[in-house]
Image (cartoon, rainbow, N blue to C red):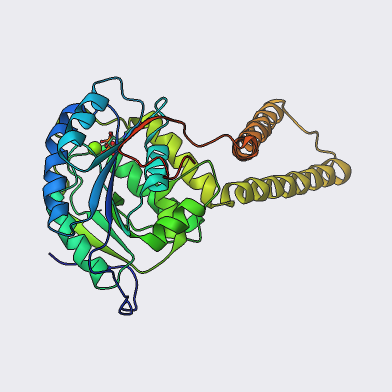
Amino acid sequence: MSINVESTTSPSAAVRPEQPLITCVIPGYNESANLAILLPQVVAALSKLSPRFSVLVVDDGSSDDTVATVTACAKQYPVQLLSLSRNFGKEYAIAAGLDHAAGDVVFLMDADLQHPVALLSEFFALWRNGYDMVYGIMSNRSHESSLKRFLTRRFYGLLSRAASIDIPLDAGDFRLFDRCVVDALTSLPERTRYMKGLYAWVGFKAVGVPFVPAERMQGHSSFNLRRLSGLALTGITSFSELPLRVVGLSGAVISLLAIGYGVVEFIRAFFFGVDVPGWATLVVGMAFLGGIQLFSLGVVGEYIGRIFNEVKSRPRYIVARRYGFDSKEHNGP
Ligand code: UDP
Ligand code: MG
């Protein structure tokens, strides 16, 4: 399999522990049937990499029997479960998983079997070679609708131009992190989280591995157009002030045009005695300006809403129950 190296320099030979502790974080929302199939596969794959490992399932407020399935697996395998008090959304389930992952190496993968378990060993080999972050790149997105593919491409194009970070296209949440990356990610205090942006923002030696996502085993994707556009808005407003600049600039341009037009009309009326005809121009102008003003308020409001969220400083998620953790372990966000 060919490898798409994001960093241009080759990684320096990092000292890696011989038998690292591995944690595989799996966020799941109503994935009971999928987890029953996935967990034994992941356990088998991890046991080949190191004798010290655990699988950490984050139950993101599922309404199915995810808790029963995972606790049943925990009797047989080294499986831990964090059960959030409600559905907080994937970004927060990931944050919860990373906060509680003890591994020297932390894998992150979806629960729906779209991320091939067979690739874990390849990710791990790249970590051994010195990469601190390894991510899967979807080389085929035919499982997604053409509208979703089109909008995703436009969004990444916009984001990479608007933000000063380089977010690799088609890379998702199928990843391996070295401890240093997990520590960096968990140290970020922001509440409004756009993980794909944060992975890129923290930096470190990273490499992409192409993979073909499988069909979702059971159930359906939770990311409809409404949820995806919310995430896209979070991505843009978390990583760029460009919308504010565009609004400011368009205000300035419209004001200059209005002044220019005023001067022209004044000269025409004063020197040539031409009446200013028609109310239609006026109405259109007013409606246009009214629209621009409301739009601008909306854009500014979007940022103020995010500041409001940050200032409230609520925890990002609430853990209702945990299984398979020492009482000494990390206790919250
Ligand atoms: N997920 C989650 N919380 C949510 C929605 C999704 O933890 O509110 C999990 C879901 O169970 C799965 C992963 O995030 O393990 C990816 O979700 P999904 O398959 O719905 O997204 P897609 O593959 O379509 O991007
Ligand atoms: Mg999926």
